[in-house]
Image 1 (cartoon, rainbow, N blue to C red):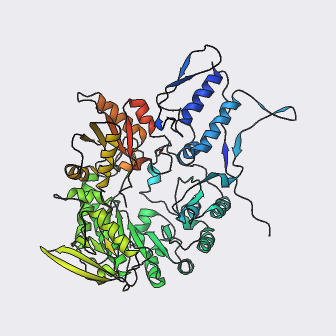
Image 2 (cartoon, helix red, strand yellow):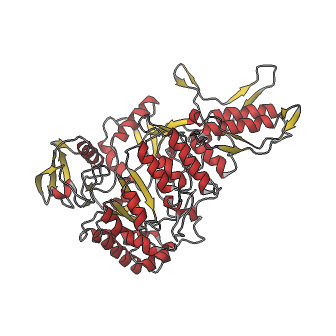
Image 3 (spheres, rainbow, N blue to C red):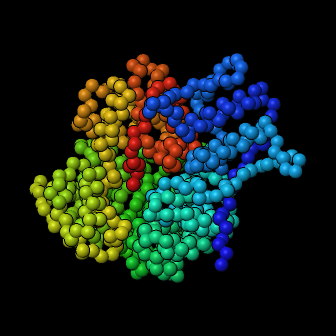
Length: 602
């Protein structure tokens, strides 16, 4: 049987620009500027900052490099390429620059060129987490719902997202090609080019691709779906692919209200899915975005009814996403964020007291910020039914103080220790918890569990806390970065959500004596609206904030430190628009360093 050919990764070229005053110098300038977005020149192991260049032949003077990096590319497709695989974007820019100077020939005649393609996809492998979604996510290019709260409606026009809708057969060919190069054991896969994500199960090829993936890996499959395609037959086919987990965007247990919120043709199918998933033994999270489409009171009552419905069908978890909107979503804010978010969190807290199914409101740090007192504590806010933790006597409100006699300092440490125990193969675990002013030891039988708990999907023995929390080791890394650069005054940029946790941790961080740390919170002007996640800040947000900061009367910092998470979507340090973080230092004129960290939105 003939081996199927690889999918053709092709990219357009812009028409060649002509008539520049110094086209060769401009080509070199553009090449160097783009190279400096890809590589860091070094001399004897130390980074070298370049400010310009000169030609070796003749005295033509020096040419400066642009302070803000190369000029931004124009189309969303090339911005997406710059974000995920800037080496290919570098090739694109080189070709465009050369075509502005020369014409290509074939048989002695000029040949018009308007694009290029990848010759061998195997030459473009990238590091991979081994998640099968890296393959079948490319089928999520259509949607059979029209949600009033869909974040795509608020996407900025220059976001690095693809705009071309492909035939489903073309997407299938790409998924098959990606599967061919997908190697979870080696930790490699084809370079990503994800952007717009819709409904994976809307593609007629989704289940065939999932079956092929199951033949290649035993890793859990995570299915994100609005539920419109979760018919009895589809759920039966999914059950044959275990282990898998379904994130069901339910939003309402009422078919009428769900259709008002999401559109779609078959709200009754999605609302009926929890019962079928339960029967098939497929763990699922019911996802709800409360939106005050009929007023706040109706929204809150429907939220409570939907959580009760999910609990009745033994949902693994209910994830309540606080409703967000960018400045592009509508001409006026659709609701008062402070009022609506506070009301949702208060209702979630009320629901938790009467609901056995864990309920989290995301971003979880918003809820934590509302609570006075110490933060980042390993307090249990929910327990997965049928889990070792639930069956072992752990209760909502318990604070974990020890795991197998190892003291627990904060929430990230508790989660890490629970993960180690969950994957250790041990028969039991000993948890010590603070409860009602007393200390209690609980022996958990790790072999005793039942649905909806899943050892493949659960990493914390069924314990649910307020998200990941803040890792205090980040401040130790911050200390090391400051010392390496000889900085005594450091401006650390955070977000509104994380700032309270950092403020709490700073006085307790070891070895910061002699280093003055100031916290700054750049507003998200790029997305605007009520977006407050630091991970969604872009390069220009940081530049604007720092320019305003420097215009003030305060002393100039020796170093600006920024968490790496806003630049972690790809592996090249780019923001959502495809712009490299180094542009911050270039435009502001202050030394800037990234503090490696994980996203806290989980």
